[in-house]
Image (cartoon, rainbow, N blue to C red; front, side, top):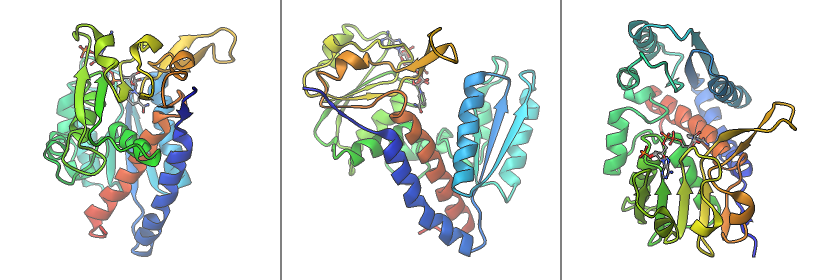
Length: 296
Ligand code: NDP
C-alpha cells in the first residue's frame, strides 16, 4: 500500500490564506507587519531562503527588509544592526539567517534580539516559554510540522513519536512541543541522535517518525514500520549533472521505498519547507499584533 502524500505547499497556502484577515485588520489600524532578515556572507542556500521569505512577505503585503553584510562583519557591527532593528517601529520580526561565519558568536546575536520580535523563536525567553507550555513565539519548522499533522488529521496524542536529530532549531523544540499537555501534543517522545545505539530499532517503534538529520536518504525502508507517519525535514543538495542547476534536493528519507510502507509521508521539496515560511509569516503577524496592542 502506498502512503498518502502530505502536501506541504497546499497546507502552507491555506495557512497563509488564513492570515489575510489578520493582516487586513492590522491595516485598518494603520499597521503593516514588517520583517527584517539579516544575511551575512554569500552562502547560496541562505540567499535562496532569505529571498523566499521576502517573496512571501511581498505576496502577503507585509513590509520586508534584507540587510546584507559581508562574511567578515564584526560581532559588534552585527549586534549593532540587531539593536537598531529592535528600535525600528517598522520592524516587528527580526531574523538572522544561519549559518553565520565561524568568528561570530551566534547565541550572543540571538540573545540581542528583542524576544517580542524573535520570529524564529530561538531566543532563550521564547524557548523557555515553549518548554513551559506558555504563549510565546514558536520556532517555525517544528510549529509547521505540528500544523502539517493537524491538517492531515493526525493527532499525536498517545502516539510514539521518534525524532531523529536533536538540533536547537528542529529536533529539541519539536520534542518539547509534542510532549506538552496540550492539543496536538500529549505524545510519547524519543529524540535520537548520532550517538544513539541501534537507531533502526528505535525508529521502527515510531507511530510518527521525524527525520531532521541533514544526511541524504539515511532513513531507509528497513527503519520504518508499516503504517508509520513519516515527516522528512531534511533538505540536501545532491549532485545531478542531468539537471539545469547541476543538483537536486533530496530529504533525509529514502522516499521511493518508504512511501510503500508509510501511511502518510511528506515529500522533499514540497513538504516541511513551505510550512517553515508560512509559520514565519504567522509569527511576524503575531509579533506585530502583540507589539502594537492589536492581539486578538
Ligand atoms: P543539525 O546539523 O543541527 O543537526 C543534525 C542532527 O542529526 C544532530 O542532532 C545529529 O546528532 C543528528 N545526526 C547526524 N548524523 C546522524 C546519524 N547518522 N544518526 C542519527 N542522528 C544523526 O541539523 P538541523 O536540525 O539544523 O537540520 C536538519 C536537516 O533539516 C538539514 O537537512 C536541514 O537543511 C533541514 N532543515 C530544513 C528546514 C525546513 O524548513 N525544511 C528547516 C531547518 C532545517 P548529534 O547532535 O549527535 O551531532
